[in-house]
Image (cartoon, rainbow, N blue to C red; front, top):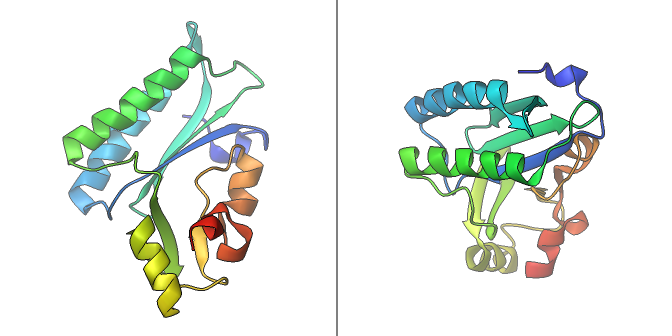
Length: 159
């Protein structure tokens, strides 16, 4: 696995958010499987300069520095298959794009779209609440725009 610091800021990013916090025993399993996957991840038989991690026991984050070899459709399909494999083995859902992650009082929480909207209306969530923008596309965006106030995010369209 490539050292995160060595990845170009333009490296492509894919973020998969679990529907719930991942238990410790499952964290170890996913991290081990991810290390194996990233080390063997290829595109058209070329090794990818790739990195992956499980962040905050909730997010699978994969990155590819395309300065060496670009991620192709089939290599992206391999990564989706890997995440589905982890989800199946751990009884998790990493593909619900309307399960929103956010912080309240420093605590990472999540809610489906309906609950998120209801909590906003009650004032539990507001425009300053930090949300996770899993649609970032590059390492630079990941570092600058992954965790942002609700008022600056696409999530705002749902409240």
